[in-house]
Length: 172
Image 1: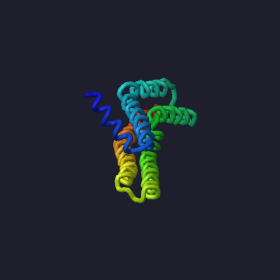
Image 2 (image 1 turned 120 degrees about the vertical axis):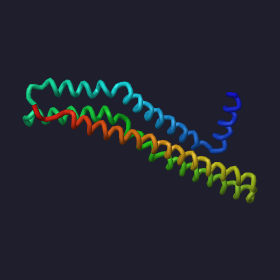
Image 3 (image 1 turned 135 degrees about the vertical axis):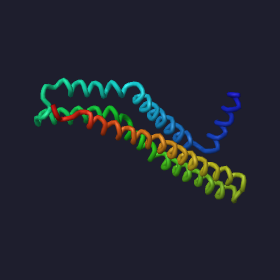
Image 4 (image 1 turned 180 degrees about the vertical axis):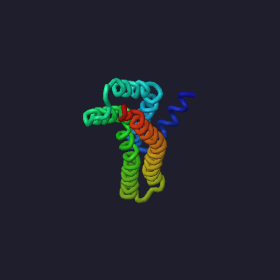
């Protein structure tokens, strides 16, 4: 079973060319970061909010300018922890279709090379077209899956930061 799976994946990667390995690495990194953020919200997020709330609630006064700046600092530090690697995840989402386009270009170069050296042999041109379309598809699938994950994370981050801002009240 695993041998057949390995053969199928290896064949797919060979048909897609070298750029497909870059797209696979990008997808792995992107989804590792998405899973890390989900894990953060499940395991660590409550302690980050509790720490910020404890620091704020332990202040004797919360109405002065300095108290306002401390509140803003607490919110900013917590928002940075809440956001985590989201900007890098969004960069991976944007990079995936570009790598797919790079695969398209390298595949088309193979097609033109086959046309120049073999006079338009259909079999060699088909391999180049396959090498052009598979990375395009893989880049788009990677980007679309990343859009789903990053949209969920972005809405969760925005909600949690706004909730923290509301929770750290200025009155005493």
